[in-house]
Length: 198
Figure 1: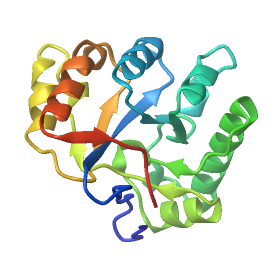
Figure 2: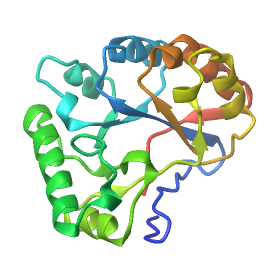
Figure 3: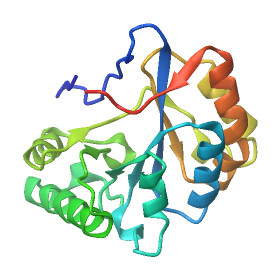
C-alpha cells in the first residue's frame, strides 16, 4: 500500500498468521557486503538493499546478492539531500541512479529510499514518474551512531518490533558484528523475515 503523504511500504503476511519484518540495508554496496550476505545466507533471511549507485561497479558481488533472493533499490547517486534540489535535479539524480544500477545488474529497480529519509513533494513526484515506490522505515537501528556500543543496536530493534516493520540498517562493520545476534533476537520474538509486498 502506497501512501504519498508518508511513503512506506506496508508489509503483508503471505498467510495472514505469521508476524514478519523486513531487513533493509542502506549506503552500499560496501566492503562488508560479502560478510552481510554470508550471514543472511546462513540465517536464510532475505533483505532489501538501498544502494548509492556511485558505489556500484561490475566487480561488486551484486550477482550473488540477486541470486540469493535479495532485492536492490536505489538510494540516489551520491546520497545528497534531495529536498535541496529542484524537481528537475531530483528527477535526473534518480533517473541516472536507476539507469546505472539496471545497466550493471540487468534487473529492474522498483524501490527508492530518500537519503536521510528526507523528501518533499518533488521527490515523490520524481519517484512516481520513474515508476519507483518510495520506502522509508519504521525502526531505525541507530547503527551508524553505535560503533562503540553495537549491542545497543540489538536493543533498539528488539524493543520496537511490530508486525510489518521495516528495519533500517547500514552496511557497516558494527552492524556485521551484531547481525547474527540481531536476527536471532527477532526470531526469538516470533517474527519471520519477508521482502516487500505492495
